[in-house]
Length: 287
Image (cartoon, rainbow, N blue to C red; front, side, top):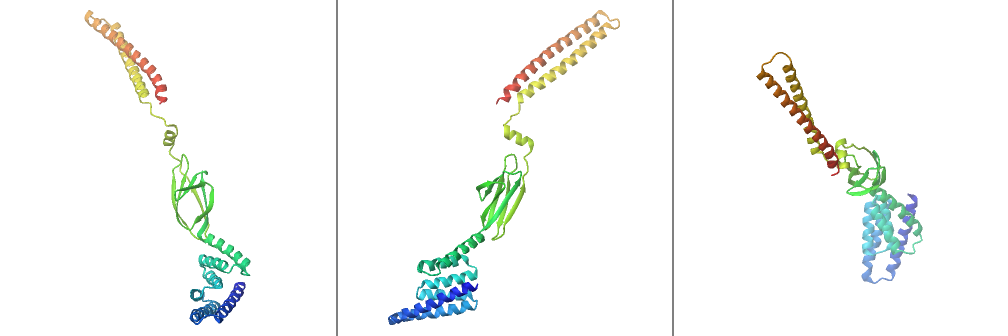
């Protein structure tokens, strides 16, 4: 603080001398602007020493408008730095070095510029760290891919849209508010997708419709064949037990024979369905 105050007093005195020397050879028409500049400069110096930096900056601006002088730019930089307006302070110091290229305090001013630019960057950008479980999720901020978790870098101060994407897991989206000078650390648990949905998406498997139709046909035919076989056996047992007249015996014989034939036909259908289902299982799986 005291170092800056001493650096202010030297340019202030130098500027007063410049105004005074410039006024000795000036024409009468030039006297009024220089008088205004000198008065505003002296007022700005007094206000700065009183800690009234905003008013001092206004006075120095008026002095520069009346008679441009690079030294005033330095004093403006001092005022804006005190006010915390780092952007305007940096602009003023740069203008000072540009307008006074042989300034004796150039190394000090350049070092101060470097320090202020770093502070300004910290104000505009804050450190943000993002991790996830599981790791290696894609990190998108405001639609731009920035890397994969765990990820850490500086982001501009303000609102942002964060998205995390990892194969086999539900996408995650969050709104972020990055504040100046406040590091932000975030950890997210990613939710796995349901197993069937994940398997279908990964393999592209399609249901084997005709395979199941053939399997159902084989099952139904087998069940029918077994049923008819049992009924045929029951008719044969009835025929062999007890005495029957010729007509009833013929009827039981024909019924048993018909059911046996039907059972054989259904067994054949079941076998054909099993064979077709086996072929279809491999054929449909290749699509």
